[in-house]
Length: 373
Ligand SMILES: Cc1ncc(COP(=O)(O)O)c(C=O)c1O
Image (cartoon, rainbow, N blue to C red; front, side, top):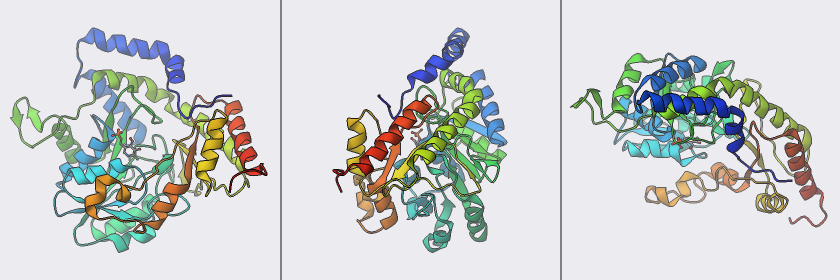
């Protein structure tokens, strides 16, 4: 059997008629940017998240960057970011000239640990930027409590958490604003790069709306030094087509996650995801941990199972951040996770039989007498 980590084609096959109709609608309209599809999608996505405003932008990185710009965060400011996770979160901070200050995760959920936050704050801290990693929200009430005590803004990185709930409230509505990615592999994915900001703050949304379009409210009148970060009509139309299917697709992911929990319980040294009782994850990724990650990955590859590592190098050890002087040992939890995590295939178009096959292969690996140690 072949189990790819990701295959985008079945999503197209399922929605072919609707996606093709969306394509033809946009082509026939002659409108390709900042038109009715974007406006409609912004309203529909805001409603789905329970946020008052949504501003479509070019990608998730720029969504976060634009929020920071709109808040006036810049050189001399610090933003708390997770020490683990994807580098885009750090880059959004770097790109506005501020300094990303890493904070270690909760070792069980892999999300920002609220108990470690206060030690990372300085008088320069302006924003806390938690990621809802792998599709499960961070402990937002605890994070908000710290933010309130210190007068800080909370910006959610909601790139991996479309539809996830925290104590019944949707990711993307849990902070002052959220940056969302619709990168094609996400739970809600466009067919090219795309992103959005959600917020309840009308003034902030208005500012970002202009910042995404060269800082211009009226054509060729530029009030801010803005960016070119627009979500195209075509991608907005595709996203509008997919949004009504998100809940069902997330439910399919949840069923497959259940299957993994049943099939992988108590196997070797494998650590399965931890779901606190307040979390309702959407399983963007199903991430396990083992000290024998490389050998397990090779075994699965040899048996037709695709896996990935999210992420192999914590940002402080990447060449991109070499000038910040980070060294091995600075963030031991992030470093350990980077050496142990492995993402198994999960998606709305994987079958139960495929997941059962992956479980069987993982069990074989740990049970084989010759398994490398
Ligand atoms: C956690 C996280 N943050 C930010 C991003 C950046 O999103 P984009 O690729 O749309 O810029 C991604 C995904 O790529 C992500 O997974």
